[in-house]
Structures are given as C-alpha cells and as structure tokens.
Amino acid sequence: MEIRGESYRILSNGNTFQMRQIFSLCVIVLFSITVYGQSGNRYLRCIGTQDSLFSKVLNEGREIYVQLPESFSKNSKRKYPVVFVLDGASLLPTVIDAHAYYSGGFMPEMVLVGISNHKNRTRDLTPSTPENSQGAPRNVESGGASRFLDFIEKELVSYVERNYPVTNYRTLIGHSYGGLFTIYTMTERKDLFKNYLAIDPSLQWDNQKFLKKAKRSLSGRDYKNKSLYMSLAGPLHMANLEITIDNVMDDDTGFTLFPRSNLEFSKKAKSMTQEGFSFEWEFFPNELHGTVAYPSIKNGLVSLFNWFQMENIEKINNPKTPVADLRKVIDQRSAKLKAHFGYSVPAYPEDVLNTLGYMSMDQGMPKKAKMYFERSLAFYPESSNAYDSMSEYYERSGNYALAIEYAIKAYGLSGSKYHKDRLRKLEKALTGNRQ
Image 1 (cartoon, rainbow, N blue to C red):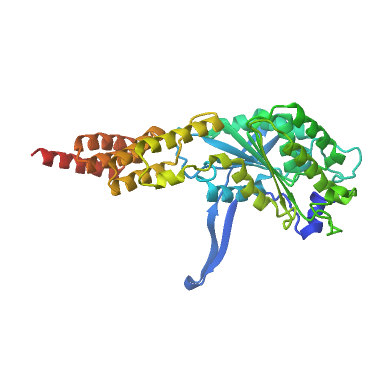
Image 2 (cartoon, helix red, strand yellow):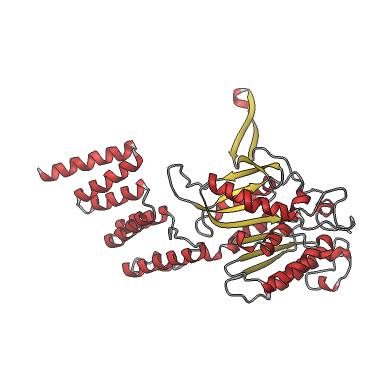
C-alpha cells in the first residue's frame, strides 16, 4: 500500500508535490501602478538560466537550469564547485535562496544546476520495477534509475563541465524519489559526487528491494571523503499520532514502512566508522513530506560544508595578534580547503581580505595591511581591485613609485576610467614630490 510518496502528499496537506513545467524560473511580482493609471507585470528577480541537451542514453532532450555565482565574470578563469538538483524546476529556487544566505561563511560559492524531471520522473528516479502495483503509481513506467544515472555521468556532467565554470567537486540533492535516487547514486557510483543530500527519501520503494542492497553496499565499500545528509518528515503514521520516533520501529504495518525504511538506512550509515565519512540524519516532526525540502536544503548544505566554516575568527579580530600568527591562520585554512576540495582555492573571499587590509591601515598597522593585500593578490591575481588596494597601501606609505606600478597593473586589468584617473593622480603626485 502506497502511504508515503506521491499519493501521501495529497493526504497529508492537500498540496501535491507536482513537477511543474517551468521554462523560466522567475519570481514574479504582480502589482498595479495606480498613480500613473496603468498596471503590468514586474520581475522582482529572475533565476536559473534555461539550457538543454539531447541525451543519446535516454533518447530524449533534457532541460536544465543553471545559476552562476554572484562573483562570476566572463573574463575570469575562476571555477566553482557544482551542485546538481533533481526536480530542479521545483527545488532550485530554494537551493538558490539557501546558498545566497549562507554562501561565503558557511559554504563556498557554487554553480547550481537544476535538472528537470517533470517528464518520466518515476521512470528515471526509481531503481526497480515492482512486480505488482503495490507501493508504486499505477500505469507509470519505473525502474530506469540506472539509465538516468548513465545520462548524468556520461552526458550531463561533461556537458556542464564544457559549458560552465565548474570543478569536479560535486554535490547531489534529491527529494522523495529524488532522495531515493540520491542514495542509489551514492551506493552504485559513489565517486561521481562528493556530497549527497537525500530529503525524505522513498526508501520503501518496491518493498525495500533497493534498501536491502544499499545497506550491504555501505558495509563493503570505501566511503572516505564522502558526506551524506538525510532527513525524515512527519507524521510517521497518518492514522495513529501515538506513533513517534521512539516507537515507530515497533510498528509492522504498511503505514510506517516509509519512516522505518529511512531509519533502517540511517542506522546503518551511523554505524559506519570509516575515517573521512560524514553522516548526519535529521527528523522534522512538524514538517510534511511536501514541506520538508525547505529546511532540509538549508540544514543539509550547512551540514555537508561544516568544514568550510571559518576558524580562528577571534585571532583575526584581535588587533594584538602578531602578523606571523595571522599568516599561519591563512596558510592552515588554505591547506584545509585544498584537502577537502582536492585543489587549491582562496582561503577567504577577496572582499574579506580587502576589508581586513584597509582596517589594518586605518588602525595604524601597516605590516598587517600589507600582509592581507599580498594574500589577496596571491589568491586573486586577476583582480584589478587587489592591485588597486596594494597601490593605495604604497600611496599611504609615501612610496609613489610602487603605488604607480600597482596602479598600472590595476588599469591594465580593468581599463576603467576610475583606474585611469587614479594612475594620472599618482603620476602627478610623484612629479610634484620630485620638484
């Protein structure tokens, strides 16, 4: 009996989790401009640029929606980690919001890719075809997860890597059948992604056929440097509210097969003692299957990237911290990030280093200021702003020759009127000092 999943969403809150066919993910604000006697549509924001590719594996076209980071520049060679979001037309806006709020301090800037699943969703996201219709939608094709995973691995990932500024550090997010597919991917082709975020996954599918296999997979494979976040929504029994997280495993009815499946897998994942495997499970008793995606995406991303959060903030904020100690803090963070990403990345955002440099100058600590500006240049060698900041450091120090040298580099990178005018100003100042 299907009591959680597609049909359960209708029973739980009267709001089905339909895969809406959205061709442009725009948040639209409708209002009337009564003052001028006219009305019309206005866009508060537009998100997710639509793209598409034809899949030879699936023999069909597939739409994707891509959100680039705020710092993205066509003229930059910088690349970013990438997040793939199943049911992208529905979930990508929430991922974008969570990422926007927590990017920088809690997680890195990333390219976000929403995969459309509004057609053939059950076919693509389920790993088997039940022998009977029990526990599955009727007259709907299923069991195509292996082919859909081939499409992602052999076609989609390479397409995104060719056309967008991404690295091979990947995260996969899925809800319900998408959560089932997320765990399927982790157990079948674990190296395709670094992080897996499975939201209220439908592990009861096909009378737990995949679940039983997945539990065995966790025991026999190396999951070092992999991270998994799972969530579970309430209620645990739609006809008996006395069933709680503490006693649900004692129930053997079909009503609790969904949460019991979730708990079985989470128990197995928690028991893994492999070094480098990170797992977090979270229960949302006051959320429904159709609403749990919202808090799970935020909490899940923060959990998966908990290692990214800045450390030693008290040393950076303390004006008495020696320059050598600050260099050590930056170098240690650089090493930590490289260990997780597998490649070198800036230890801090450019604006953070820039701000720290100017604060140090204003507080009469030129050695610290120079150190921050030097680190900014090392991490962001294509930034005209980094060169301009170093130019201003030397200007304040009275070294106009070096100030001009860095101003020339800033102007060469930007070609902006601001940097051109600033260069002329420095040249005049240097001439005036010589006379």
